[in-house]
Image 1 (spheres, helix red, strand yellow):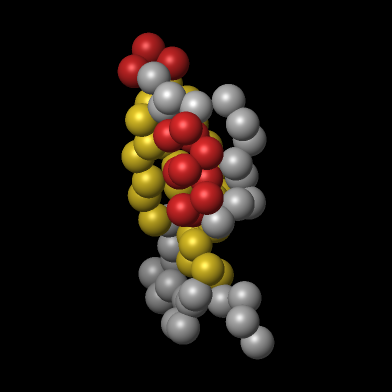
Image 2: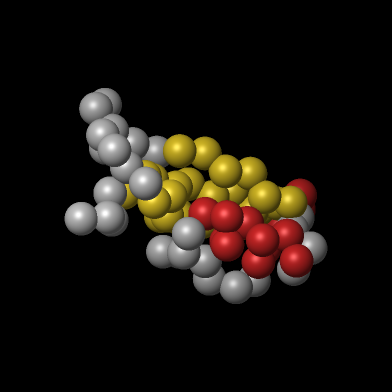
Length: 65
């Protein structure tokens, strides 16, 4: 399995799907979140081999200045 931590969410999902995994994504954030956030990045990856499923936790960052 390719390490997708730090990648943009859509790219990470595409890579893992192409490798034959089922992908489940869930947002992780603080109570307030990031106002005007524009960039979804993978911060945690968990593989459940028995289910052939990868669980991605992502957070939204503000990367545009």
